[in-house]
Image 1 (cartoon, rainbow, N blue to C red):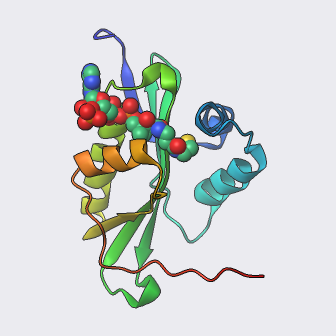
Image 2: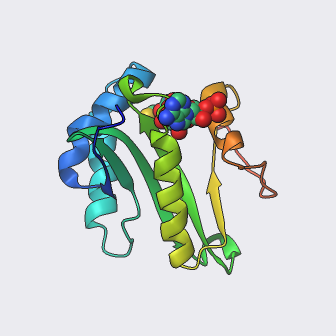
Image 3: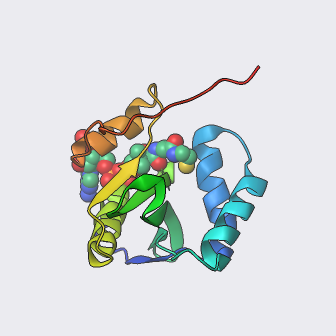
Length: 150
Ligand SMILES: CC(C)(COP(=O)(O)OP(=O)(O)OC[C@H]1O[C@@H](n2cnc3c(N)ncnc32)[C@H](O)[C@@H]1OP(=O)(O)O)[C@@H](O)C(=O)NCCC(=O)NCCS
C-alpha cells in the first residue's frame, strides 16, 4: 500500500457510480437518484463553488467528501462551510483516506476565508462521530431544531 498512488481532486459528474457504490457499501441502499441530483448541483450549480473532493488510490475512487461554502446564510456573517457527506470504501478503511480528505478540505476552506466548518452526525453513528472527534470537531453552539410533521 505504501507504493500506491494517491490523488486528491475535486468531485466530477463521472464520479457518480463510485460515490453510489461507496454509499451503498455502508448504507445497504442504492441512492443513485439522490447522488445524481446532488453531484449535478455541486458540479453544475451556478452560484456554488465546488469544494467537494474525492481521493483516488491507484486510479480507483477510495473516498469522497461533499461540502458547501456559505457566505452569510443563517444570519452568520463569517464565511462558513459544511461537510454534508463523507464516505470511504470499506476496502480502503483505516488508511488515512478520510483524514487526508479532511486536511485538504480544511486547507481549501482556510484559503476561502472560512472560520468554521460544521457537520451533522446522527447520534447513533458512532464510527463517524469517533472520526470527527479524533479530528478535533466538538459539539457546536448552533442549535439544530426540528419539527416533526404529522
Ligand atoms: C468514518 C469514515 C469516513 C472513516 O474513514 P477512514 O478513511 O477509514 O478514516 P481514517 O483512515 O482517516 O481514520 C480512521 C482510523 O484509521 C487510522 N489511520 C489513519 N491512517 C492510518 C494508516 N496509514 N494505517 C492504519 N491506521 C490509520 C486513524 O488514525 C483512525 O484511527 P482512530 O479511529 O483510532 O483515530 C469511514 O469509516 C466511513 O465512510 N464510514 C461511513 C460513513 C457513512 O456512513 N457515510 C454516509 C454514507 S457514505
